[in-house]
Length: 338
Ligand code: AMP
Ligand code: MG
Image (cartoon, rainbow, N blue to C red; front, side):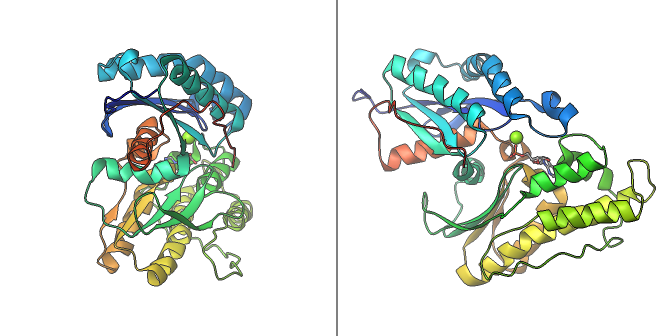
């Protein structure tokens, strides 16, 4: 099916949550990476509404794929490989991208590579830097996931810990929603916290009782809501800036505490921070301070590659293909929500 010609162009599709994205890569390098966000659609609800998300993917996917080909200057007939996010994510959203990509691959008789979208996030910094040394310790922080991975070598993912309840991004979004600050909460909190006193409010956090590397953010959310109520905080309150700065600082510290612990045990050669929340300046700063303390090189993707995007999905698919080429369209390829 794949023919004898070495593959050159790959088309990747990503629809795991609320971004419809398609990218064209040439030998693993991004030529185009089109991302259509659904923020405006979900904003009135203060969070992603799964049914609205999948319906919007159906409306957008044809345009997004067409635009990614136009921007790359590549015709659909020239695509040698297809890649798609299989999971985790919202099942209705995932199925839109998976079905579309499967249809294209089947029609053009090309291989289709399924990709785990959390692993793809870790691939993002490699698109901008080809000298990242292994072993790698990677912290992935997004709207739906908070996970710590150790990679002894490329494509060798060892999950050290993940959140037991809310993801860090979800915690930011929920607190912003409670304060009626807007959606998505992370960037709003970042903007409103600027210049605030991050030491003014103290959050008493329940300690995790296990020795592992799991995270928990529901306790922090509850502590934040308690402070908001006790101090009568609102969008207009003069102490809001200080509260948000303190909250943002606590989220950053809670995230990096686990990485710090794992660093001592696993002795990585490089550190990676990725996922939507990795756009946050305070978190990026604390992360590079941690790395500098250990004299380790640290990598954070540029903001556009932090968000869910098909470029990173294509990059991982390309690596997977190089490691073990698939030659057919697997029509049984299925989506998985978790
Ligand atoms: P993703 O799930 O990877 O698309 O990332 C979306 C999540 O990232 C949402 O929870 C956002 O609130 C969060 N986010 C985006 N930008 C920022 C930022 N500048 N600071 C903190 N969180 C952010
Ligand atoms: Mg998203």
